Amino acid sequence: MEIRSGRHSRYLILYHMVWIPKNRRTVLECPMADRLKEILQETAKERGWEIIAMEVMPDHVHLFASVPPTIRPADVVKVFKGVSARKLLLEFPHLQKRTGRGTLWAPSYFMATAGHVSAETIRRYIEEQRQKGGG
Image (cartoon, rainbow, N blue to C red; front, side):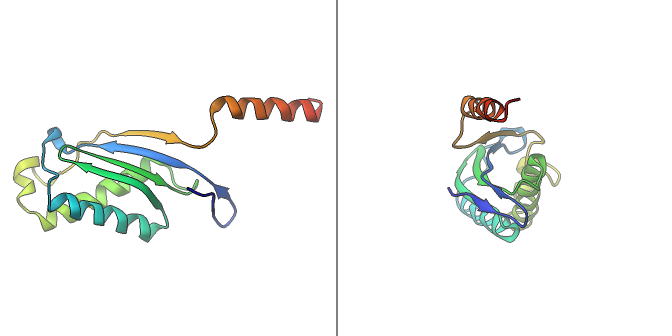
């Protein structure tokens, strides 16, 4: 993981995302799991995002990615889920019978940020800046 650069920024923003198929069905098995990994990689690459780690389990997906600060976290998940659902449902039509009427993913998801700097380190840095600036 390295600090990335955008047009007007430098950043290291890491998101850990987890989502599940509708009704937590165990549908993400080979070859579908392999295809899902390819789709997620393609989706990230097309947008200039970086996938750091990924695991597809039969009933959920873990994704750890670096995304620019200009993209809202909810939009990151929306893109990954939307693109992958559309492509998987087209390529594996039998999924519609298992998950129901053109949907693959449950609407919910988990998202957390991660990084190299702890909240305590940031707090100390801000305190130090205040002391240096006399404010």
